[in-house]
Length: 177
Image (cartoon, rainbow, N blue to C red; front, side, top):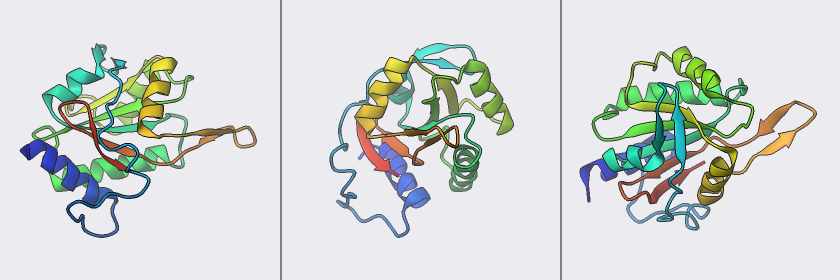
């Protein structure tokens, strides 16, 4: 197995799983999504580029996570924890990279720049913070099984924290909620 791909699968298991990964084990909700191709959406990045998602995963396997910047209770602590764990485990930039995309149509590139800066990642090429057209984000959400519900009482989205491991061919190799 490709070293980077093996590393990303192992890493995602360590970050999320309560126990060790066992070869050939897939969570029931994962089965529907494993090896499904992610759509090659265009991303407006916080550093001012417009790139296809495939550019990121063809260079190195990627971890994709979907957030929104107005989410103080889940998204900010989640990205903070993800950064901490990835730093502790090492390999970021060498074996894989992280793509952080907003699913909220209200978010814009300035919001993503602010989030990237809040985590001190604006000069770290291993992380890509960005936005995309809503139709493209909807395709990515459908392909990965990521669902959100708007709660008008709280004015927030109800959503899970999700990590998607994508290999160099654009296939989902791990989906962890």
